[in-house]
Length: 419
Image (cartoon, rainbow, N blue to C red; front, side, top):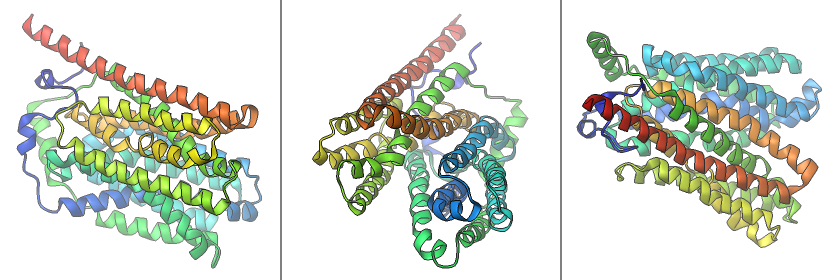
């Protein structure tokens, strides 16, 4: 039997139940959303700080540049595994409580990196534990957000939450000249740990979550999900996240390869990040105005992003800027909308569903940059961009197939009820 909630069998893919649109939420939704962004930023800080201060880290701990990639892979690898199970944890104990624990754990790991990381091995172990905290936090954070705002504002809210990633990269970058190069790289982790502790203390409990938990126990309800559609979406997410993270990792270097000055190349990367940030907010806002079809939009965005990669493959210098805008805007601006689509299609099991798909995102974050870098070394940039186009197209098609599987699941549920 397919594990979908029968009460949602007649819904359009990606649509909210009509009663949910009028559900009242407690005041302070904007404050809770700000807390959500801060928590997300705090738990991804360890890996982005490590990337930002990599030069200082390598000189201090005496390891090669190749191990920077290994450290990042370790962080996202443990996050990917943890995320598979963290959704159930959040549904049992509430998103706010799990967020609080994960954010505090991230603070502890960053504090320990500052105090006791005197070798690459120690750094790797602490980043692995920080990855567990991040993997635990992400599905809990999604659950917290959807309980913090009204149903007709969740698309925008999840878009705002995903904006925490470019915010984290920005803050990590600013910390290099202001802290790492003045008083030392360890203090970057110290200040980030202090921020994370404060954020963990500011995370409020959510009375709505408690009411939902009590009601489910009273009714003896256990909402299940169908693994095939959500796993298909997780694979699609892995491929899509892999392409976008490869773009983020190598755009500046490619621009320099295309004869842009390093400063100009950095500005192109900054422009792309800004476009991605604006896109995540705008598509989330439009999702709240649209009746379903969110996965169709996600698939079309990933496919359009592939056009940007194709423009990179042309190796025409003046096309780098429009290609970056297209690649970042479409190819990396759909993450929040994707989470929203998963949430509205798995009501009652939002934590578990987004935990599985988030695992795909973490896998892509590891595999994408590593695979693209290997391809560049052995095949060159032009061929590598063409391969990235193929991966993006595969991701887009899998998004459509995952949506199709959800439709089939609901149709079968309807047939079972009639029979």
